[in-house]
Image (cartoon, rainbow, N blue to C red):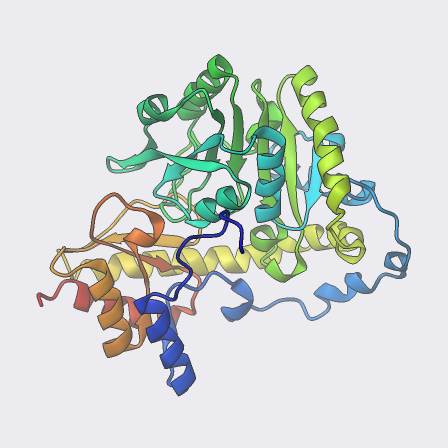
Length: 390
């Protein structure tokens, strides 16, 4: 009865069942997978959302790419990182997930594929499948820092490949796209007539980022390229549902892409008027929110590195940016055993490495968003269990 674009197995796994039982019991627990800043105890200005009540939102003025004032606000905001973006190249969406869906509609026929990073966030598997597109992984390799393995792209590209997806900084490895990697990717995409899609939602949160990182890729790209961003991370407001695509590349192909995207966007008109009208005000006030998140993330990363010195069998891998830390732990138990035992014994939830498609075990992935006192205690308990033999 249902589409084969849905995942074949939608039953709850052991971790989901265990977590549901814990939530039902009402017992306290610490969530080291937290990705929602509005649940992490940050202070937001009390009047921040007053701009959503602007009476101009009472008028419905549908524009496929979004209201011009909102697109101008997004373009202006990119200048914080030195990018020069033409508002005419900005396309507003309701979320980054929707942006991916529109780009897959733009670039791919059913059955074609896109190259996606591994390890990375598992949402790609669902977003591509829902568009009848295949996600083909290429590798990120760790050699003191994470690097894109372009050779693995070359080995997996086919005549059915339409785009290369990059997340910078990547979730969860925290690795930014570097200048030399972008140069190789640009040549790779140009030679094969592929589009380059760069998800930069975490770009405002550098940690140990080297000088060679690049952001706002689409603004200066020669091959057809798309940069994705949104309020979810840049303003810490995922509930407001405003994302964007910045379209770049040589003028002729860029113009053609925008013309086709206009048809797609006009078929949905998904972005609400209040958030578009509020966009300029929200983006202009976002600095204090970003600073709060950024300081918290830095503090927790420093804390887990210091705690890990007491557990030499574990290693906190290099992290260039974002909201997550990857910890390599001994393979004395499977990742699933570690996660379940930690939840049962210590009431601490973490992500296992296999959730992000790490090629082998054992890795623990933790969010750096929780309150520092809770984070430090929970991280210490996680490292204690992870380095203790069964």
